[in-house]
Length: 471
Ligand code: KG4
Ligand code: ZN
Image (cartoon, rainbow, N blue to C red; front, side, top):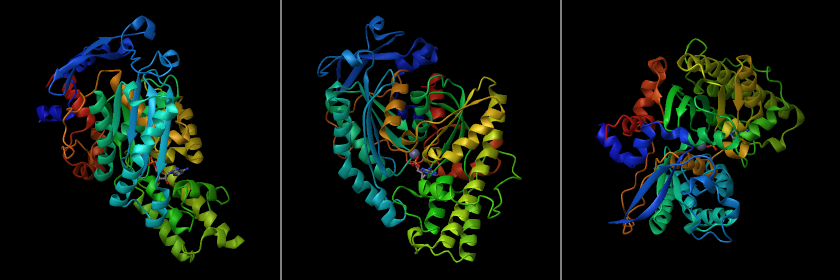
């Protein structure tokens, strides 16, 4: 089993050996390409480098950089590509953490039209957008494909039809330019982007990932090493926001969450007394299906008609909808607070050096979520770190940065074979767990979530397996 996992992961042995030997504190490992090894493969030698790029001597790839390397000489360039759900994103980030260029194409119109993501339509939209998005990201960065040092791409979790579009594009670029690749875990990218945007977010830290499809609490111990403290037993909070926004007849063009947050500003958060989920369960798991149902019943009882857009309601009806939105949001966020408080306790028992709570994913752009979680972290003397809203939702920057974090540790895969056929098997991981599950959290939710995780071992299990030399 371990061997199978390792083969799938496809990391090269030498850099991982270096990582296992504890070289990660040396300021990163840089790969220097030394030539094709035949059969489409590329040999890499690896060298630990620290300090500035000037002293490092290796690792600076000036190849083909238009206008010289002056502004970028301390960083190699990693292209990141994201197509796991409904956003086509790409970005170029340097290995020393500068965002050189990015581009994003969202499928908001399709979402509004169909009320959710329809996989084949989403795939078509990615396929139409991908070339331009990547070209725009490169152009915005002022670089060309041949200037890149590696290509990172989300390989899961997500919709396999959508993942395929990004992975094919990434492989194509990596194949042509003989670049190493990083297969990125979408949720790890959400978690790690905080280390790009804020200084001093050191491991270990606790992460709350809140998006349309995920509600995860993790202890992040290192790149590729996570302990899952909690997850949702049913719906994610973003899904509950979206559904409630729809039932309240809100304009969904900018997304249900932002529309509901805005309306809630006008309402009374205590107007409706919804109950906070799972208070009797002393763990870090989440449940939003019950709250969604409470809100649905309350909306029906008040005869709110979602077919009548908010813009066409009178003052009284608008007030009613705003009260509903504010009351939903209050309880939805209270549930987050309960679980985060406990997660911080659990995490600090595992590792007392935890100093930060990182909150990311689409819902992390919500100001009420931010201010309440700021309050609970301050209560226990920790720091709350939220990436800027545009980097909380799906984007190419977070994938490029996750690529950097792996690349700097030598955790890359070789370029695809030069003669890779168009219909080659692709390593896509639609259901892929990020962390190893903490015993206390297993009791109820995780049995179900485990069943859903499909065949791939978690990223953490794979990375540990390598580090322990099982391959
Ligand atoms: O991370 P993301 O862009 O995509 C997924 O991986 O799901 O998250 C999208 C989710 C949607 O459910 C959206 O309504 C929610 O994040 N969201 C918000 C806010 N902005 C986005 N929810 C509440 N308040 C917001 N301001
Ligand atoms: Zn996401």
